[in-house]
Length: 453
Image (cartoon, rainbow, N blue to C red):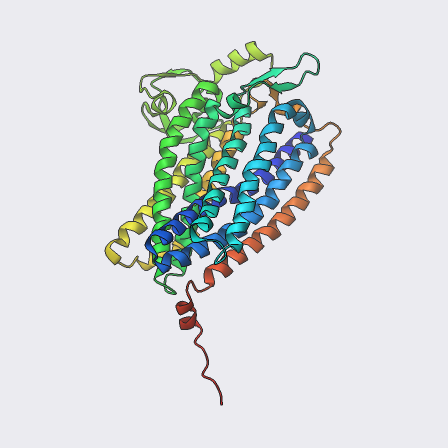
């Protein structure tokens, strides 16, 4: 591995770790807001207790997300200063607005909500957590707009004097077709992760308080609904990707020859794929263009086209990585949604879920988290060798003078610190989940001792 490989690995580790917590913050904020509104309207105490639990989980997750997100900002200067220098005029406004507007809404109103219990009027207090939920969505939309520029560069012009990319329209940058397709897909995946965490906590603590049964079923519904929405939004995103990045979709299928009525391989073997494949006829054409007879461009034709347009070199991403991450993203996400549906079915009309199911469901958050991770690995690696598609390559964005030793040392430091943070987060979540939901439950778990006279 050379310095470029190490720097890419470092950025991948930092980004993926940060993204473990971002979807949780988005979904937990919305869930806490929904539960508090339900309590405000129904006056049912169980909704109040669940609101406070979900809110505490949100605060712990939000704090970790902030810490790991700050490292993301430093990454541009540490390893990718050439990229930051060239695209600073485009990325600067998005990062500034996300920090000054979206993050301000989240942090400020989350503090008001947490410290405002029994101090603020109920309607205003509820509005605080609603604003936090809106802030998380706004933050995600703005950051995704910056990432979408790398997938489909829009709203820029190359300055003839400085040679740098200059932003021409902030509105056009926000309304990038990739961003409009990726945002609902990302939020749907976030709903799955948050739902899976609530389902796990609810099942784990079901014996402690009946309200945990409500939490478990709510989490199962969110996991199922998020899975269905992820499939629908992913279908639309796939068609947009085929339009703006045809090589990415071809790499996802390891399709070397341009094919009409292209099949989708569920499984394939070979080097590079596929020598043997288990295929579903016409499905790739449907996913790519919505027409079973549509023609999907192959890797070989696209390589020749890009070489003629951009100059000599390889424009083919790592085919096995693109192929398998695409399938793992879909398969693991479907499994998580299925388990959510299975729990809902087995607990309908007050039934008890079978022991074999409740024994394993506390691990279900790992599934949508893995699906999200594979999705981002596919999104970023199948864009290679471009850092911004069609404009500049990844090798052009690395910091000059950077050495492999420097990157390895910083990567090791990040890994150790992130490992500690992961342990702390898990312990805090377990501690919060173990706390009694209501005073009555607390009395039942820890009965008061009779006074001694």
